[in-house]
Image 1 (cartoon, rainbow, N blue to C red):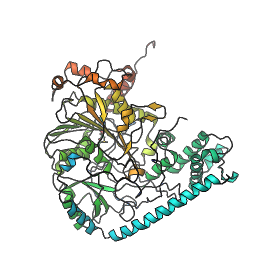
Image 2 (tube, rainbow, N blue to C red):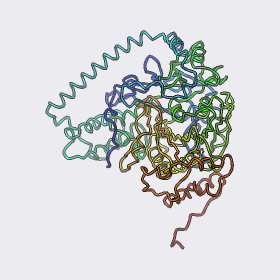
Image 3 (cartoon, rainbow, N blue to C red):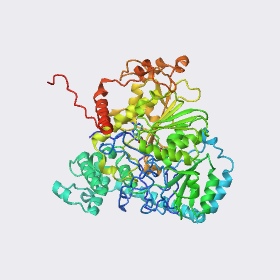
Image 4 (tube, protein in one colour):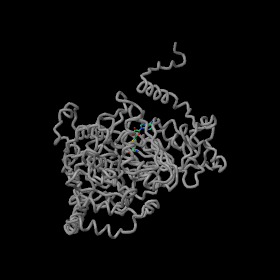
Amino acid sequence: MAGRPATKKGAAKSSPAVSSQKNNKRKVSASTEPLSKKAKVGAKIGNGKLNKVVPKSAEEDSEEDDESWAYGAVSDSDSDIEERDDEFVSAEEGSDIEVGALDDDFLGDEFAESDDEGKAPGTAMFGSDDDEGEDEGEEDEEDIFASNSEDSDDDDDMETKSRKLDAAAKLEAEEAEAELQTNIMLESDKYVLPEDNHEILQSTDLQVVQARIQEIVRVLNNFREMREGDRSRNDYIAQLLKDLCLYYGYNEYLMEKLFYIFPVSEAIEFFEANEVPRPVTIRTNTLKTRRRELAQALINRGVNLDPIGKWSKVGLQVFDSPVPIGATPEYLAGHYMLQAASSFLPVMALAPQEHERVLDMASAPGGKSTYIAALLKNTGMVFANDANKDRTKSLVANIHRLGVKNAVVCNYDGREFPGVIGGFDRVLLDAPCSGTGVISKDASVKTNKSEQDFQMLSQLQKELVLSAIDSVDAGSKTGGYIVYSTCSVTVDENEDVVNYALRKRPNVKLVSTGLDFGKEGFTRYREKVFHPSVSLTRRYYPHMHNMDGFYVAKFKKISNKIPKKMDDNVDLDEEEEFAPSANKAGKRTRGGKKTEEELEKVSFNADEDEELIRASQAKLLHTQKGIKLRPKKSEGTK
Ligand SMILES: C[S@@+](CC[C@H](N)C(=O)[O-])C[C@H]1O[C@@H](n2cnc3c(N)ncnc32)[C@H](O)[C@@H]1O
């Protein structure tokens, strides 16, 4: 088995469990500040306190309520890649918050962490946020939240107690570690793998499985000392994967894909965090109100809330509410959007500037488009596109509700851009994805994704990201940026796509997302090696950041010219060769059809991709128009 990805030291630190299904409750958990010591969703297995949470049933589709997320291209229900309207999970088990009938764009999106554990994320990350006029009155805001917080003394007390407990636990762990190093290993400490598969298959008792998981993790973490005889690491891992599938209910393919993203103990934390709902969060619509006014209005209705964390000036975390948070008068008046904290991140990375033209290529139901419009202060233009016509209904509804006046809603396959219109200052591609970052919202992801789904999604994402890049004007005075994001944690849908874009479009480079928390994107993963700049991208995890799993990458387009031959071995350090020409930049068609020259430039014709593209087009024709193409005869076939 190939080696696991290199991770930063300390990243895999296992933490005491603090999560429970009540983790939305202020007294129990922290805010959606990136998790450090506080509120870290925990390795309950490691602590022998595993608490199985019954997966939620799949949410019903709802036109009004559809949430912004993942999935399937322009395919319909027979597609392998389904399109789903995920919505805010109302009345979830363990949550006191009813979202109500009108909830909208939750998104299967998610969240982030600090690179240095325990380091508070910076406050002033985004110039554009400052423009929202949120600075003044911050003290007033604090007063509001302080008076809303009956528990603040308790919290202080709890914090002190919690610090003491942390210190005691640390000491104990150090002592235990020291003991391990000095004690002579007893034979009985070694974990003997069950010899025959029959026995393994029959041991479906979750307590037995849980105990075995604990044991194997213990052995893997101290392999030299604790392994039995000449058993290999792979023997133990094979058993562990089986047990994890059984325990958490994933199919083997997905389990393996997710498992290798993390060091062993951290993988367990990730799976465990997927069993717990993320905090309920809302985004203040600054086109209509300010955060402190909104907070006050909701507090007056008995809502218990707090700012989402220092990293956002518009987010609020709702701990509990006596009223459905998706049907308050403030909600109906468009003062806020129900939106996962993680889904703020790509828009913050995009950092749209007033008067710009921005394309949101896959935008329904509009959580991010409406945030972009708010940052533009209703100036400039947001093209909110989505390939799924049904989903554009909720997009339009949200645009109206939130008072967005600078949006154009369109319904194209994103791959048709920039043929539809190009020359944008910025493009957001919040791509359709597998949703592996939002398993806590939709447990069906655990079993309904096959290898083929991942291949198709990754292919679609690659095609879309090239279109997104080609739709931006490198000569934009204020912009020239593309943000790619997904609510998935798999490497195929993230680093692999970004690396592909770098190879196929040497006229872009990766730049910092401007998000000062989140784990670095991988530059190697198992047998794959990516461009070093992929470390500028950011990963967000439920167990680390208490947000949905998410990924954000930001490109800067440096030229409108794409070299004719897109050589896979192109040396990205030679990108100067394609340095922008200010004159040519202005030539990009605005609002019209692509010229022949442009079509040629953006054509996607690498041999290696031909078959996949053809398959994807055939599928599209079949699902959309009912046309079935005959399989192409390969050479030599009669
Ligand atoms: C993650 S969701 C977008 C969520 C949205 N950005 C938001 O914040 O509300 C992905 C969207 O991509 C759309 N989609 C799928 N295939 C597409 C394609 N080929 N072109 C454009 N949109 C597509 C889906 O209909 C879905 O609405």
